[in-house]
Image (cartoon, rainbow, N blue to C red):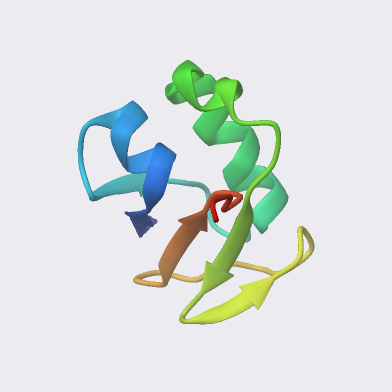
Length: 80
C-alpha cells in the first residue's frame, strides 16, 4: 500500500524533497515504516530521533497505517 510522507526541517533537506510516497506492506505499523525508511533512505539515520504524525495526529510506534494515510516526519526543533 502507498503512504504519503510529508518531510519537514532537516528531513526535507536530507532527502531533497518536501514529500515522498512509500510503498509498505498491509498492516504495517509506524515502527515498520521507520524501519523501511532507514533501509530505503539511509541518510535519515543521521537524525537521532523524530516524531511521526498520522493524518495530523501524533502517533506512537504501535499505530497501524492504512492506504492513503498522510504521515509527517517531524524532526527535533532547536533554536532561539
